[in-house]
Length: 206
Image: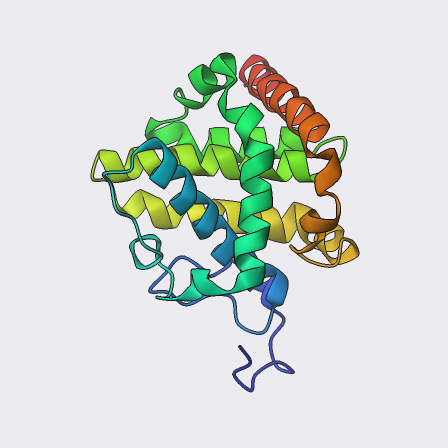
């Protein structure tokens, strides 16, 4: 999605990653741009499963119409959802996620995100981050706090930019999850435990 300004601006140097405002994603940076699209696809599919009566589109999440039709995006989202299946069944994790709300939501989200990736990165941990974001976005939709959707997506993109960017480059981008799919179940169980531990650690050190 080049706009002719590639030589004049480095996307990762921007203070706030775009990808949630008016459908305008991070320009000239496939990692960031696809990250926003994949996150929206993940959220849409999770909501379709949890609440089929609620029809959510990419536009509702600040994206472009038709962005989820890319076959590669669909495949990446599908693999992330398979990893997420075990995470979603963890009752303790759901209880902790439900506590992330109110004026401290950003502080808690960023603190937990840092803890998730403190000692390593894998696709299960990336999904744990997406799952936390999905829960917060779903809450924003159901409570009509629509401005919070943009905030949560920007929080995730900030984590991608600051913590995950070089790792994603090494994986070959978001499509790297496809080649590692065979290990998804082990990764998912481990990610659930890491996310719970991150919540507990953050709350103890506040």
